[in-house]
Image 1 (cartoon, rainbow, N blue to C red):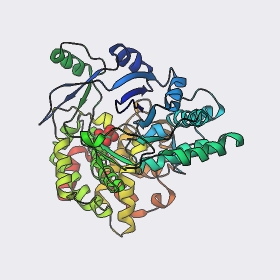
Image 2: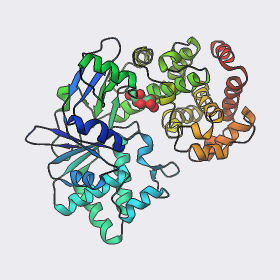
Image 3: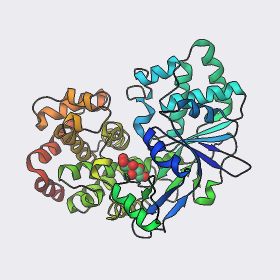
Image 4: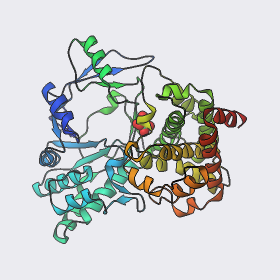
Length: 441
Ligand code: CS2
């Protein structure tokens, strides 16, 4: 959340994890460091833009108050794909989610969409001015989506509440689309120790990141905003093309490397992309499956972009783990891989390499005990799995998960055949089998 004070912008940082606030940011007056790892890394930097840190879990009313405050001009959210509580069948707010229902029933809201909607409702009642809500998550049309989710929440309120809020939202709130790109692994205890050695102080909120960063924003703001362009942000009317390129090229390859890496016992993304066969599979998925399904933003060279992405993945200093990138797969593969799959099938082409990434995810689900599968749908996925875990049993079972695969895609025998082919190789022949099949290509 960003307030403004005559262009002196300050951030109220809201985290959903109470220990992050209690243990980390609050005792440090919101100060934290950013350490870049890899070629071209800038020196360690202390960030002082957070003027207040609030736990969205422990103090939801404060979050609502800050959103409602007239001084707040921009609300940004980075809550990962699952934080939006999207119903995959409708693409809208999951009204079957008990947390969403509890927020609608009037408790101090705990969900991101509930906190934003209730904050905007309080803002409307207080007569505060226009505000802009900026999603910074890996979702196509993330601003449009956030608007639709907030409007769905408003529309589900009691009759006397819904209409005035919807009218106010439409007149006073904008939701620009954005594309944000920077690899930021989970900070480890070793990272905290390294920062302490360099800084001479203990920073419990230290952030580690790659040197690369990119932020593309639709210039659709309801009121004031910081001059993010001065820090390198790009304002564009073609954010959708940037989002598609990033999701279907970078994020899709990230997921492919995560699941192939996990199958081969590779702990990090850089280890996984260091396996020549996996590097080849990424290259071919980007070139042969993904690029033909997207229109690149003006001026972006597809080949150079793909080469740069793979070079970023190879950064050995970053320590991005296959387990972290492979988490929440049920929320990611549709956005990153299945759009490419559908685009190729519709064009009469076989998405050979995107199917490999999906098959590797299926093998990850089947080979990981439910209690260890880091996925909001872990129970649903494991309930769908048969006792047998071979290709002929697992592929149709997971294709039957309508939260992920729609009926038309699940019934496509070309796709099912590719999934079965790759799953069988991973499951039966492992890394050697993958090397042979990918290099045989
Ligand atoms: C990653 C992304 O964890 C993941 O799913 O693919 O967080 C990725 O690091 C960022 O989108 C890079 O901009």
